[in-house]
Image (cartoon, rainbow, N blue to C red; front, side):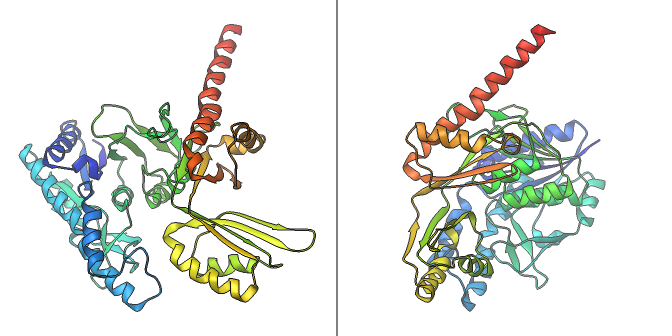
Length: 423
């Protein structure tokens, strides 16, 4: 007997027919003799609807900052948005009962999923597993509402968009589960978004560092924090489709390949360019102190000691960052302060970024040959990020995917075939 956490996303639970279909997947695990705990998201579209209701009666929870009212209203917004998972937890329990299984739904407060006080983006600090272990002992399938938690002051919190993934991974770690299965509307993790790159390929196995970059750089398959916690606790995660019988993608500890594994894109970034002042590193310091996470930073000091500074950050930080930058412009007398929202950040991800010393020059040459201008570039161990104009995204993604993944794979297969013939 193995113990599994099985999590279903919103599209897998979009209506009662799909909930019954998802329940059938759980039945297969149980009939094979395994212990199963289920984690559910809200029905597709419900969380957005609930946020819309909340925003008509309060501040915009994504734009407001630095107000006393914000925390109080975010607390009530959490009460509203957490209700979506309550509905699906109850419906999933009913569907499992209809399938002949003994099931019981649990909300965060019922099993003590404790979090910090960061409403809207809370971190889980502790999960009490006594009730869930008791369910296993009595042959009951616990159905846990994802995305939600409880503060030490007994206030409801939510874990950020996609937070049900985090609930599932933390439960897998706390319950010492053999594996955590994340069921979505795609067959796994792809080398690129198939809606933009039609010949994208499913990745069978990917390492945690690579998957973390995928999540951080725009791929919406898994919540970033769930990958971080899965890596910390070495949880065996599988990403699968609820609708297609396929092996999916497995996330593993260690390096899966030595090649480029995929290309992601993010439309959630802002590009800032500042010129004219001789000292610009203070700008980075002030933004970092305001907890605005900066990425793709380039600081250039010219021979005349003038300087330019380029960097990106998330659009969710735009209101706060604009206020800070406007104040700094007055204080330091920037010649220019340009803020560009019409960009896309494309990230090339894989261990091959580290192992191929020519990767950056090759990428820039390929893009230049196709008249695609790169505004910014930055490189780390498993990631090369490029900032380009939004209207060049589809062309750039296709060119890079063909060059770095399709052609490289074909060349590798040809070398392997030739090596086999030589032997």
